[in-house]
Image (tube, rainbow, N blue to C red; front, side, top):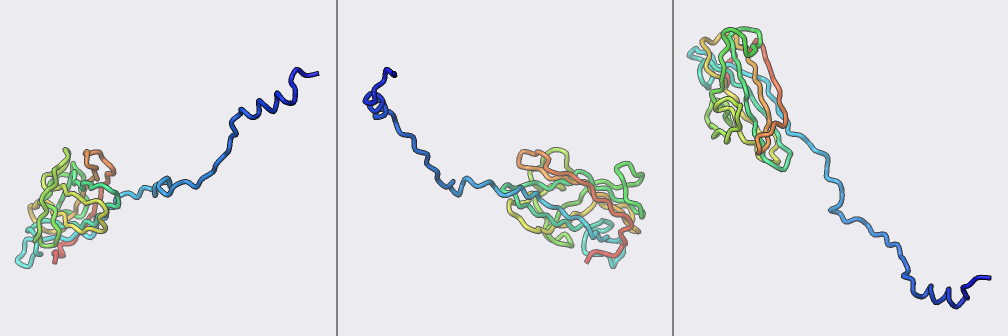
Length: 188
């Protein structure tokens, strides 16, 4: 026979704390954040400004490269040209191409260099006049990158090396766009 009476067991049960499981719905702020959507860059459709009297509206003997950029992130970023090479041949240049002109005249908000952007506080490693700030949440902002002035204005070719940087100058993305045989069709 057991040393415990029924009364002892009941007395012990009265002193225990009942455990109740409660389930509640998670608050809305606990939902996972949306997936990261990176900034986008589109460079293409360059046009040339010849040296003739009927040249385009930009700087004589340059290439104008349209830039379309979006920044869906919550922080501003920098678009930085790290190298722009232009030659007067039909073959897209590399940094070591003989006769290549290196540099950027500026980045503008319109064709014809009518509205110049103040260069962003540049992170190291970019071309002078080749860095702009893209605000947080920006969609399809349009700019024009103008090359350094070349020696003549026949058939142009260009190579644009660029990167995107966060506020701390940390690289987010880098790429190269090269285009050969850009006709001297004059920018409008």
